[in-house]
Amino acid sequence: MRSRATRLVTAPSANEAAATSESTASQQVSRRTAPSPDMPNRDGTRVIAVEEHIATEAFLRIAHGLDVVPGDETEMGLMRTVENSPDLRTRLVDLDARLREMDALGQDMAVLSLNPPGVQPYPAADAVPLAREFNDALAAIVRRRPGRFGGLATVAPQDPVAAAAEVERAMGPLGLHGIMINSHTGGRYLDEPEFAPLLAAAEANRAPIYLHPRAPSMLAAYREYGMPFAMWGYQAEAGLHAMRLILSGTLDRYPGLTIVLGHLGEGIPYWLRRIDNRHAFTARTGGAAMSMPRLALTPSEYFRRNFVITTSGIDDPDVLELALRAVGADAIMFAIDAPYEDPVAAMAFLRETPLTDDQRAAISHRTAERVFTVAEADV
Ligand code: MN
Image (tube, rainbow, N blue to C red):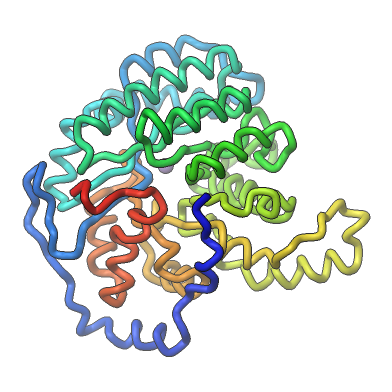
């Protein structure tokens, strides 16, 4: 089991943070020419983006013919429209075009994952074989271009035992780098006892779990004003799921789990001090009545021990600075969220946002190499 116990508080000191903001004007921004497909740049600014979505025509053909489980109709109506729009469909399935785009951007590597919410809206009997077929295809893509593509396997939490077996297959024979789970599955969350086999397999096989957003399980209050999706519902849902993992004691049972959150931590870095505060207060005043398990650590200690966050969809220097103070650059990874966010803007953000050289190296590639076990020898 990979122990992360030694990575305690990695946030920079106040002095380092101040030095960072003062060095903005003189920051040496490395600018690179596009590397050839097999010879990415080795000047220390290797760029790995870790939330990059794809699909295969075979997957879309089968998935779009399936009934979705009750409650997921609204979300899947939108996602199928997205997946059927010619431009986005091409961007999801055409990996030669993806490589050309990566070359033009100077992006060395993309850690690929199935377009959300993956197989989770389907009955288990459909979802389990669909996940296996997609993971076979993903592994073939990664094997063809090991220096350019990594892969996060898809699993069907609907069948936790099958999902556990798929984690083992993904991290073993398929040679993938982790798994992606798109938040709730039929309104169920990973802290619930039925998912124990899946979490045990992720821990035992050192599979980081990218806990990706999807539309909230309790849709009613989000229905109007476009809120179920990326503007607000996604981060509310994924943040809720992460808090359930922390507060339930799940991370005492599986201390070696690594959970990856997009959107620079789905709001949690902003709330961290208050969460600790109010957790202590609530546990003291009414914990027993509110079924609050006694935890070995404070919520922020779990966040710093077990979570790694990515920049997907938040090209905002102020939010990044807050995240750096909360968790440090060794817990932050670059992500674009292809094909949904502007890759040019994301790359410009990575290169130009005020950072020390060491922070930029960590966010660009070093944290991803550690978390997803992407060997430098892959380059
Ligand atoms: Mn995404």
